Length: 225
Image (cartoon, rainbow, N blue to C red):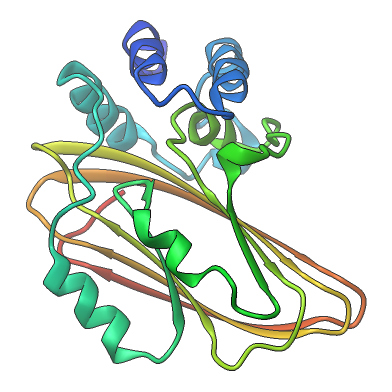
């Protein structure tokens, strides 16, 4: 029996509803790659113990509802509680959307922040689920650490399903310059009662002699895929 998959036509509609920014060409390329290769199945050696049926169910319910991302303006108290609990320079991605206050942290010596839509990187579509991440990416962050910083960099990825099912893609690219020491706190949080699939990609490149302390925290209100 042919394994269930995401509704490709509805997926294409969702992709084309995303902002017409610098990521648009990469989205179309990723969508075409997904249409050719689909999701990994139990027949793939590296995925033979991974059942993606929950992803397909949540994804198709989300697509049937229009494939729209939830608002980024919610649960300010929950977000403030996280950022106040740890002394860090915080960057926010809420429901897959880079927070508008990003410009507020520009100008910190040794730290450069930009959006992926401003200068997209080539997508690594050979990796499983990378094409789905690239096709549905609203925007992402590029972080360059070029000098010693006074405090860690916090990356808060917070989400809530817009209805009874939600899908969010996040991508963060980090570059740490030669000989620099950097600390990162990667915090994943969510709330709400709906089923949710979050596909997050973090890619880190280190220069010669660079060292990184990376802490990952996950706090979910309910179990998500």
